[in-house]
Length: 200
Image (tube, rainbow, N blue to C red; front, side):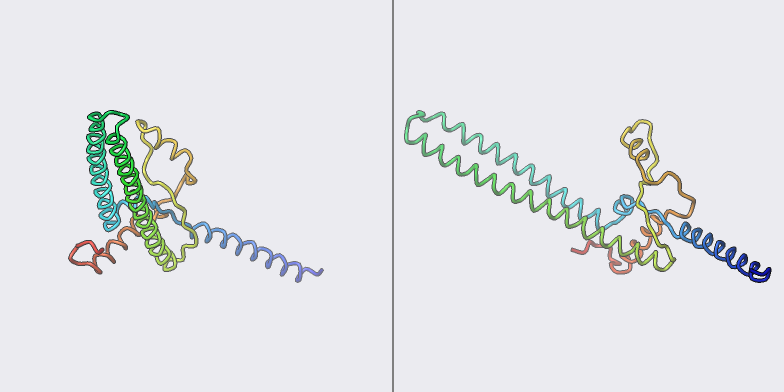
């Protein structure tokens, strides 16, 4: 190989190496972080609907406790009959049937509440993911890593372990896009619903 070809090959090799380094640097700069938990907490419609579900769950719990108390009072009424009497057996069978029906209704209501909560999280996550996707496509971000932005608290062992086990050890300023996503969701929802009332 003559000197000219060798020089050309060396230049091409150095150029390829430089392009590889640039590509690696670009890949590193095209990574962002987002705190999904924080986005959810600042999602007004999500928090309002979650509060409504919690209110329904509290009301259901109170109603269930009242029904149980009423049932216990009815059960105490068995004491007025002799245990081997027909009245005792009839009343006991009636109470057993009421108890079974009440349990079925309570399970169905609890299942409905859990399903509604799961659906709310499902819909909100898909919506947030769409906002993140649009934001990243606009800015050429290729990868978003979920993390918890809350700092460790010495008084809270759970927060310490969460941070110790986090997949993110260090992030450079400007990599966290959480507030950008929160602001975008708030702006879009405010424009779509200027009255501020919750859309059902």
